[in-house]
Image (cartoon, rainbow, N blue to C red; front, side, top):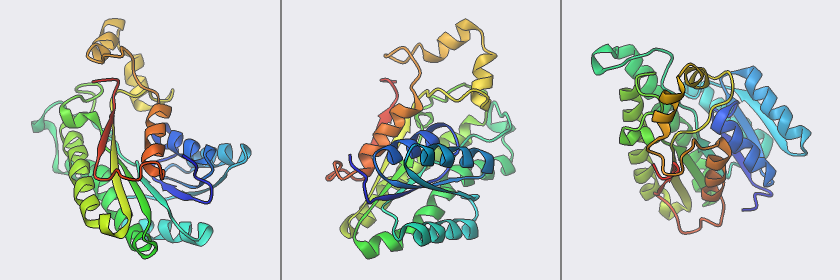
Length: 259
């Protein structure tokens, strides 16, 4: 899993799983474009990578906006000359709680679909022509075990549209892999389970407010008996993005501790 002379674009990489992916690919030699809507967070990741001897640039961009996505990909090509890897990591369940379908507004539904699925479509659409022209490319999409009804903290956010969007990621991955296979472009997905969030994140704050019994309930159905680490997801992404995964496309790998 050597990424020397490879370049990668990772959306939503200012924190959490995205940050871990950026650090992992950089550690293995890739040039990395860190993209996030939070400029302060992405600058920290860029500084961390560059101070450790890697090469990273940061772009503040909204991955749900077609013009900003186009600018993001152009910036990556201007700086790196090519894009070998795209990791569609940006996503989330929104800022508003919605404990059932009757509480989900049209606006909330559209927001979550755009964040998790439209962003993936826009970024892939923008980078695919370049990958086809080189007959090479690796696209890795981040889904979620919420697809199987295993939302991380039930009732804590809009689980229904989030699960629907992440299920869409799986279908999107399968069809895009079929379409792009003859062009040498690989498309796979990773499905994280309960992953530890950084201190200060919304999910971490929710978990901190839970009682010990409530915390235990959220992980009792995980055979390994613990939440995963962002780095464990990142290593799986790195494998799928590498040339070691030379006969794998259209696949979803669960990183869930057996959940």
